[in-house]
Length: 193
Image (tube, rainbow, N blue to C red; front, side):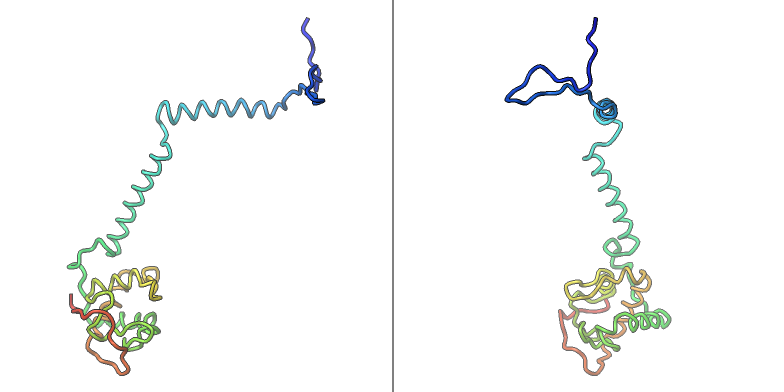
């Protein structure tokens, strides 16, 4: 006849006065243990045996590929780096220059002066450019900013059309020689590039 187990039965042995109880595990713990074994077997089959799911390396590579495609589409849409220089042509019509003038006086004049003469920022009316002249370089500078000099990236504030309007207005300031112009900074460059 089988011996009936007693809950919290004291075992016969002890070691250095330490006695051991033969306790039963709580049912929730036993079921959690069995479920973890089932989960482990299912995980191994899903990811390693049948190769259905992506492991960490494959998932990382897929995310990086998706991000690079998204980044390339964003660059193409904004013209940051993907657009060829010949695609950017400065506006010369009065309507776009007036819009650029309004945006310049709304956002740029505190650092560049109301006439582009330069205050904290450089003089925009001379032939010298710190980050290159021409519509492509000016659009790029406005878009990405110059964080080291305190100029923010304006792509979060202005859309592509507005950035091009401001850049075109800035280029229209060339040679206006306003009073109290800041001394030239950067390299002499041709603004019509």
